[in-house]
Length: 230
Image 1 (tube, rainbow, N blue to C red):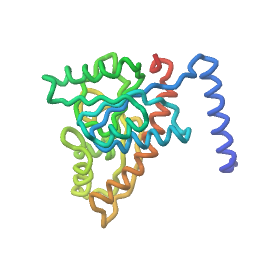
Image 2: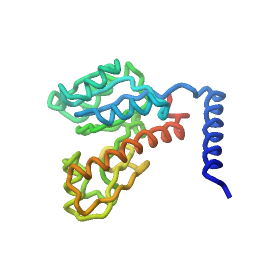
Image 3: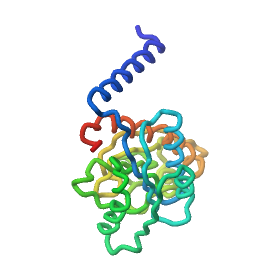
Image 4: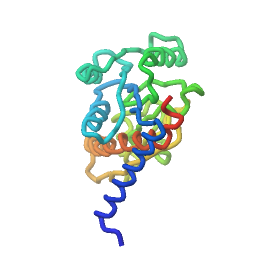
């Protein structure tokens, strides 16, 4: 029977073997990530903190915000990350808006776009299929009633409470051309308590997001780096 220490040793060996394989295969470079946001930047801050502690091996090379004067831009500036503000109202179509975002970040050669509370629709071309990730603060697909256009932030948690379910959580998925409809990569489940408010549920879900998103990003890059890292 394996003990917990045996499990930890196995995990260490597996990770070491994976890293050696990466080096021998010429895949040792760090994945380059552009982060898209619309507000406080707390997901960006969490990703940067996890990176500083060595639990996620990515380089955030650019940040795009759909709104000016948000804290997410301040967090990027404090970390010396190039920032861009691109507002949807300045573009005639979702396609044009998406293209301008890509034009802004492409000089930094991102391998992956990570949505971190980004509230605008992207149009995903075949070139970017599988290269854009999002996290939604509810369980997908079964909570599709608390997802889709218009459901974000506290609106999601309010709907979860209205539905009277016993569990909520967070879901990381690949972004496709729908709203919160792409393939699921990972989920974290949290209880919905009898006395929950929107704020208390939101705080509990975000704590789960802080562990889930970095872990899923790391796993996704490791499993797909042969085609993801160009």
